[in-house]
Each structure stands twice: as C-alpha cells, then as structure tokens.
Length: 341
Image (cartoon, rainbow, N blue to C red):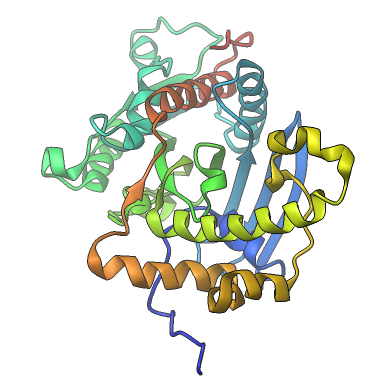
C-alpha cells in the first residue's frame, strides 16, 4: 500500500517566520538565535535575499510568553517589547511616525490594530502649532478600516496618506495566523520587512513595505486565529504525547498524587516511532507538516477548515492591545515608564 500523499498544493496559513524555523533547523539564507530576556523567549531570525523560506529579506523577532491576562506577565512582555522596538525604531529629531491599525474593529480577533491605535499618544497636531513638549516625538495614527467596509484597497488609502502627510517611518499592527495553537495569543512578531494586510485570514491585500511606500515599515502582529486543520493535527499529536507521557510518568509511584495537575506538554517526552504508529496507525507515520496538510486536504474541499479563535478572545485582545500600545509609546516618546494595565 502506498502511504505517500501529494500535499504540495496545500498550504497551512501562517505569518510567523518562527513556525518555519522550528520545523527546519538548518535552512539556506536563514540565521536564527533564541534567548530568554526577562522571562520572555525571544527568537531573532534574519533572512538573506536568497532564503529557503521564500520570505522577504530582513529581521523577524518573535516574543513568546505565557498568559497575557496575568499582570506580572504583562509587565515582562511590555519591558521586552519596548526594548526590541527601541532597537528597531530610532526616530530622529522632528521625524514623524505614522501608526497604522490594520483590521476590522467589528470582528474581535481582527480588531487588534484599531484597538492599539486608540491608545497611541498622538502628537503631530501639537508639533504643527509649536506646542510639542521636548519629551515627546511626532506621532500620528489612523485605522483605515478594511476593503469590505470602505470599498477602497487598504494599501491605497495608506499610500495616499503617506504621500500627503509624509511620515518618516510607519508602524503597522495587525492580527496574524499561526500553524500552532500553542502560539495563539501568546506570540508577538516584529519585523522590518512590512506586511500584507489580511494575509492571516487568507485575504492578502496590497503590500505595505519600503518598496511600496518609500519609507521604513515595521510590522507588529499577534496570531489570534488558527485553521481548524491546525487544531485537529495538533490534537492528534497531543494524543500521542499524552500517551507517551502517561506510559513513562506512571512508572513512578510518587508522581501519582500530582498526576492530574501536570502539563505533559512542558515535559521532555522521548518519541517512540513504533509506539506512535501502533497508537495512530498510518497517521502516526506522518511528520507534523504532512499531518497538517493531510487534514487540510480533508477539511478544505467541504468548507470545514474554519478559522478558529478562543472563547475568551475579547478579554485577551484588550490586554494584548494595551501591551502593544504602551510598548510603542514607551519606545518612541521620552517618557518615564508608563503605568501598566
């Protein structure tokens, strides 16, 4: 029986460079380094022009963290994100920054960008009347909406604003998609390569980048949705990991008292291919990418490959937007550390 499946024409949506880097440790034209900063996992990925990821040359910095609704975690994320942004954004005196909140404020998982813009300290109007304090830099901000609301390509709106207002740099915030449910609402990606609005939900629009706008573009994104195929494939992998963990863990009688409270995903589990194939059959012979592609192939033609977001998304999006807006304000303006949320 031929167990090979042609999966080349199927692609799981993801906007995160780290999704590809973790799957492939050695890649042409890709340099990456991971370190822990203030309890936050920070991965720096640098891509050359000729790279195997087929992504734009530039820097992709990923912050991975635990529950953003926890106050102490938010403090750490804000400090780390501010540090990263200060390295990427170095505004000169009187230079104007434009903050763009991409997305639809009427759809919760897509409302991150507009919510961030609501809390940006905008100052350009004060500069224009010579009332800007020396502790503040010039900032303007706008949420251009989505094409379904305006009838106008989002990229065209932003291009027109850039031509008229003439900012020196642009920061775009948007919701993303990931190939892993473990990264959902627990990852922030910062890149200097720009962004395609709507790419996370398979609705890629006109690119916002240095090439299209003529100014540096920093993109900040958080994966807020995943394909149903990702959830199914991850669940299948979790079944095996839970099985392997139980098999190993239950050997120790001392551990049985705390058994139900242990997160097996945080434990080092030795994979046994024979056990995996015995438990999952033919599916157990597939690697992670093949498994995701196979499930995509099954769900997509019948319209069941839904975009999924957690039930607590309203609360989480609010916290994430505050984290990003505070970090942007702290990294650009010469302020004392802003109070946290």
